[in-house]
Amino acid sequence: MAKDRKTEEKIIRAASKVFEEEGYAGARMQQIADSAEINKGLLHYYFKSKDKLFDTIFSAAFDKMMSKVGKIFQAELPIEEKIEMFVSQYLDVLAKNSYVPTFVLSELNKRPENIVNKILNHPNKPKVNLFVQQIQTAADEGKIRNIKPEHLIINMVSMCIFPYVGKPMIQILLEKNKTEYKTLLKERKAEVTQFILHAIKP
Amino acid sequence: MAKDRKTEEKIIRAASKVFEEEGYAGARMQQIADSAEINKGLLHYYFKSKDKLFDTIFSAAFDKMMSKVGKIFQAELPIEEKIEMFVSQYLDVLAKNSYVPTFVLSELNKRPENIVNKILNHPNKPKVNLFVQQIQTAADEGKIRNIKPEHLIINMVSMCIFPYVGKPMIQILLEKNKTEYKTLLKERKAEVTQFILHAIKP
DNA sequence: GTCTATAATTTGATAGAC
DNA sequence: GTCTATCAAATTATAGAC
Image (cartoon, rainbow over all chains, first blue to last red; front, side):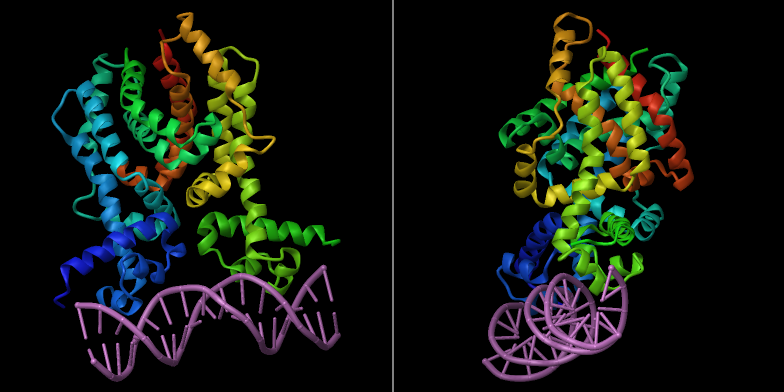
């Protein structure tokens, strides 16, 4: 079982790229082997099956997308600061992993029962209850507009992630080329933060 | 070339379901034939290849997702009314086609060059320039907060579509079961409208 | 138009030499 | 550990009878 670290990492890097671009069904073991500059035999030696390899890649991608959310939402911070920090740090995570959201969400949508239930029982599933209560309390005290916590959270997450998942659609809609779209993405940290803070003002 | 209408419609209904749930690569002609209650031979008689069938289904799905946006954005309406109408009517469209967004966006992301450029030259590509100018003018005149039109549009679209694309992720995050999530979706028409209108107040 | 049977590829996975 | 060669199953597509 003592595999070569360098080779394993090459495989994981290659498999991430292929799975993220093509999805589980569209990915080809041959393509992954080529991209890792090894042969199919060796690929199967490291990861017994396509399923096993996929599980490894998907788990890593899922963590990339979820861990930051849970951490920031549970942090001990005033609500406005928490919003600012979330938008800023999560947009950074997404910028560094721009293909991950479409991959993770697309695959999640294809295996709803299997995966979702599995994760809901997972020990380090992201927790948001602290943030939910914090929003509710702020609303009750009149510090922010009366808004249901769940919807504020959905709106925050939506405005951060959708520009990545919906990139081609928005490009078409706004007639932006690649460069122009990148510029838009860079502006969003400030724009989204201001948008949310104004939206919750009492 | 004179095909049977009933059969063609059965195929399209079946193919829509399978492609939307499994994506292009995951869809099986056999499964589509079974679902349409015909055999593979007949399926190929109506649609020469999987590619041709996919093109038909994808175009229809794309239209479902885009046509309403263009129409409302170009309507002659005051800005606040336009926002209200967009959220209300687009959320209705999405509720009736809840599997379409993930399908369309996932496939779009897999063929960026091919499709996006093709659509950008398409005659009835959605137009938003009127709405962009309308927002800019309102901002210049101080009727709304100074916000870049593109970002307001991205935010509107994000908050409407993401709850469908990101459904399993949000369910995990907020620990909501199917029923609870449906309730959340129903509340969004009012919540999102208010959120946006407050966010743009001067 | 609709069916059955089958061809032609593709693809995940294994065996065995080095 | 790594490679080549090959198998077995799956899958798109076609041929031909009715």
